[in-house]
Length: 145
Image (cartoon, rainbow, N blue to C red; front, top):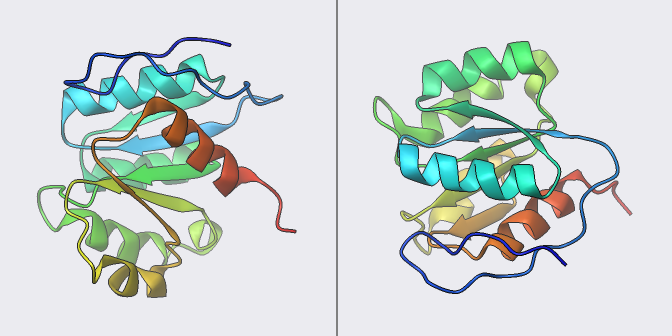
């Protein structure tokens, strides 16, 4: 099993799940460059192709052009935040069904209800263990049963 980088600020490595068979594209949207690089490194190590975006407008543009299989979205983005990105994303016909995982330090008890209308079913709180991040992305990409 492979070893991953520790959670930012953490110290112990965590084993990652097996790599997916085909390279899937993950659009990682986070305004914190360190967190973005960390998530990208973990996901690349797990076999994903990562497309980074530091803000919502770039994320929407890249969602159209890179055709990601899943989006990892921080809620605490400047200029409207992650919720605005979700609102706009769901208005773009080819992206309405794009799985979106929210990875944020701003998750409250009401967050799930607030984001459910946008199809968000997975909320991940920062800090997160590398194995859990990869597991959540794999779950989002799994065919419905």
